[in-house]
Every structure is written in C-alpha cells, then in structure tokens.
Length: 240
Image (tube, rainbow, N blue to C red; front, side, top):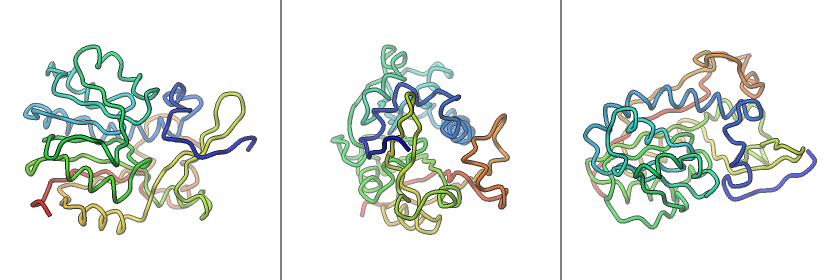
C-alpha cells in the first residue's frame, strides 16, 4: 500500500467508483443490490408520493421512476459526496431533488418520506443512521436497504480495520473508506431497536453474480453458499 488514509465517504473515489475494471467488487455488489431492489421499487414507486434515496451515487430509485414514466419530482437524491451525486446528473436535470448531506444527520423534516432506499449502505450503517431513517420516514413508510455481509468482509479484513474498505485508485495509491459490517444477528438487532420491522430478507451468494467475480469475493470460496450481501424490506413500527 503506497498511501492510505481515512476519507469522507466517497469523494476521492467518486470519479472512478463505477469503473468496473478498477472496482469490480463494487460492480458485483451493485449488480446484486439492483437484482434485489429493482422489481420491488417498480411496485412501490407507483404509489410513493415522496421518495428518498440515501447514499445514492448513481440513483437506482431515479432509474426506476424514469423507466416506469413516473415524475422524477417525487424523488430526493441524497449523498454526502458531491462527486458521487454527479452520477445522477441526468435525473437531477429532469426534476429529481439533490441534497448533499450526511446520511446520519440529514437535516430533513420528520416523517417526510413514504419510501426510502439505501443501496450498499455500509459507509454509514450506524445506530445514528437507523434512528435518522426512522425519524424522517412516515409511519406507513417502506425502507429498502442492502449492505455487504459480515461473512464476506470478515474473511479478508484485519480486525483493526473491520470498519474500513480499501480502494486501489488510479496512480497507485490506496484509500481506506468507512464500511461498517456486522454479523446478521447484530444487524437485525440494530434495525429492530430503531423502530423497524423486517418484512423480507434476501441474502444472495456470489453464485447469483453474472459474469466475472471480483477476487475479493473469491475469499469465500471455502463457503460458497455464504451470503455476500444482506438485503431487507422494512416497515415502520409505531413511533418510539
């Protein structure tokens, strides 16, 4: 590693994040996350009046509304990185509302959204994030969330860097960015304690990926049926 540091999520890597050749793990996880989210969002978006994507980057929620000919003015696209938000430029220009904010402290009003989605939410998967989502979703809201699995991350991350993901960038340097993963029992406890209930769980293995696998996914070759992603459909419980 020629250079390593903790950075704000994910400004330094924003311009190359979706480069499949450089960041195949991101591409593999993005594929699996979209596999879970897309059809569910197609159904939910029809009735959603005010929808939010957190940590959006290239927004799957906006893509779904575009594909289903629904007004993009219903969508708010939030990311802490202005560089990542640029990947949603075409939808912003078509009416989606952009917000640059921390997912854990959005500054948005209470009970604003009836649909929230977070694809690969590991950069901010903390108790503050879950409490913030519960605050801004309305009492009948639906929240779709995906994150890399602990079964995957724990096989190659050192204990001292459990909550960091390494990205090798153009030019040879490496960056450590926040990436919070925890065992499924801990994840479920966190979700439920925040005021959500589990409607659906989906935990795909690497076998669900079409095409080449990242070398980082092959660390689980001794347990090929272990999940590489946790995916949830959540509904709110009564305000706590």
